Image 1 (tube, rainbow, N blue to C red):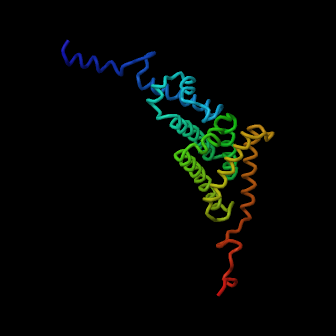
Image 2 (cartoon, rainbow, N blue to C red; image 1 turned 180 degrees about the horizontal axis):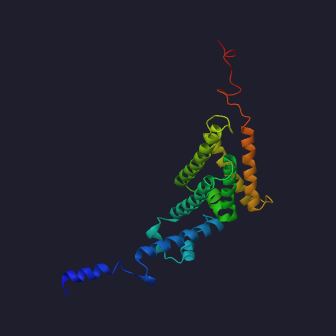
Length: 238
């Protein structure tokens, strides 16, 4: 066989296959998925502080050597788990907001209900995002603030659309958006840590009711150029 024929035969064989006929990249991807699933289960059940890397590896059936090929340490996989959960939640949010059904207000209210339900129907999700990720490190806090701002941006954008259609008064809805994200975060944490007497579906509906109540109240809001207790021009000292 000539050199060119050998080269052609070798190139036609495709990527080298390993365990169970999978390529090295496919095996790596499967290990990553199992580690993320194990991290979600253990951080959401035991808690981040109580879960060593060895426990994650054991549940994922991955060696520590392979773990460190993909993650720098325990906090590194917490970031990955957090990112995966937030990405899933944002997919639900965007799909609900663009469904084209009902009025804009109803779509936003339904979206809030869907997002809260996602976090509570599997309590591990809500615990990781709203409890376990809190206070871990400066980097994790930065990520949490970025998530808060991203969700607040969505609320602000749709509040502005409501204002354009006359359903809300014209104003800057940036801070109200941040406040709403914080409120929903605390509702989730309350449900996870206290006996509220509500099911996951009932708590998600409660969040929706609170949002609708706030929208109703905001319809009667009159924006001012100064705080209520600030002196007017006539009251200001000369």
